[in-house]
Image (cartoon, rainbow, N blue to C red; front, side, top):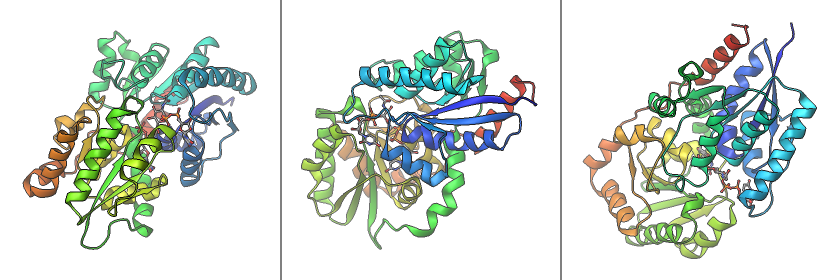
Length: 369
Ligand code: UD1
Ligand code: UDP
């Protein structure tokens, strides 16, 4: 039997985490050949995830440059992905999410008239500036997509509102929950981040639209909280983007109860989430994982494309204003009832079987089910 060759394009940390279960499912299937192309949009962060999930990419396009701009990154990716298509001669391409690697994968497929499968399709804020440039990336990728794997009904509804053919949309759940389940036991075993008798607040921030003043405000709020609460520890595994480090280090790098550390690998990060009291973050993936771990998230953004956990009351949008962040954090630290209301353990983003559904849907499309 001739196997269907699928190029899975993976560029950044969250894509690798969310594609790992899909890659595993495709590699275990006998009807297809799963070729993993690392774009290398991220270097250290991508390699960290590959190590945890034991993924060995078939090719690495090595596109990352220091403090890369969007136009140059897009140009490098498109040319390199086109060459990869030449080399591998696939029947389809597949990618997850809304990064520049994903937009370029969809465009590269389109230029070669190859079908494109989009994992985590249909997320929208309906604001092109928030998040930037991700809202544009996912809308453009959506225009070029043959299989839209929407994680939730609300992401499916977004696509239907854009007049996407319903026969091309599949509600699968988010593969991040599959990834989380697959590491949960390993993550628990060997890492200790919370100190006995002290509460831990986990922090991440990396969004481009928060660079500059918003990130400085976020740091000012953390500094104020840390100064007023010597009994609480703050752990901030910082993103290697130099625009993050330039602001964060001078603002909170020398406070005794704030620890800045290099990015944690996924096992360590899941352990840190589990041991935290709550999480302050502008990350997308963390908004999906933390509710499943019963950890409240205060989202350092004005809008989110993940409204389900907000509606469930377990994630709160606080934006990046000093007073709003401090007030919301104070409530979680001082009011047990407010905390309990947010720490309920709901998982609106999936049941851990999204990757298997995706594999079955593709198998059926290629007559292999
Ligand atoms: C990218 C994605 C964003 C995603 C985030 C996940 C785009 C435009 N942005 O943002 O959607 O939420 O990844 O983390 O696709 N760097 C390193 N080593 C690394 C990774 C990054 O040194 O392993 C530094 C480099 O200087 C690089 C810079 O960070 O130029 C920015 O990387 P880039 O991928 O452009 O943007 P992110 O902010 O990481
Ligand atoms: N993450 C990690 N180590 C860290 C910080 C985050 O493994 O130090 C994981 C996190 O659990 C989530 C993903 O990385 O699955 C989110 O990545 P990021 O915030 O960089 O991107 P986004 O989700 O915002 O696109």
